[in-house]
Image 1: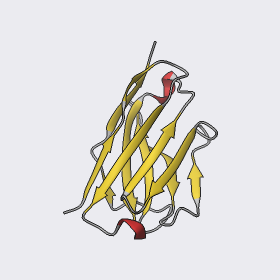
Image 2: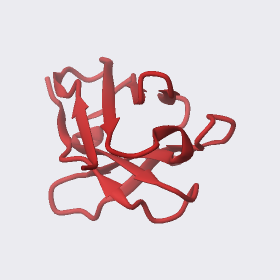
Image 3: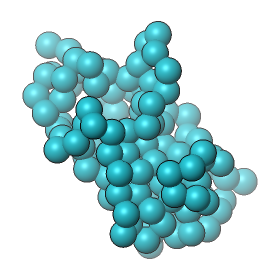
Image 4: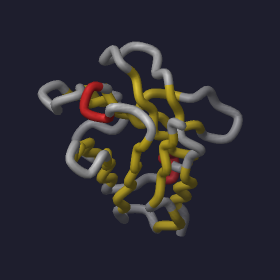
Length: 119
């Protein structure tokens, strides 16, 4: 059974940092591209960052470039999102997703972790 378990969200002040993690199980992690999406209240889900199966290719949304870093550890079946210089507009539920094709629709989704940026 496929499972993606996000963790690391929380309440943080503007300018702060968090590290999100997503542990995968139930599929061959090293063959899947991994992505982080987010959905803010009243808004559509948007792609934040994607990384190819071996980590050779990475893409970021323009709104997070220079502040967010995606990485993966295939041995630990885990993908990370280091988020820094947080802004109130980064407040959202952050979702981990897995797709066999890089930059295409993911097949699997996690349940999400809440990130709230507020003073």
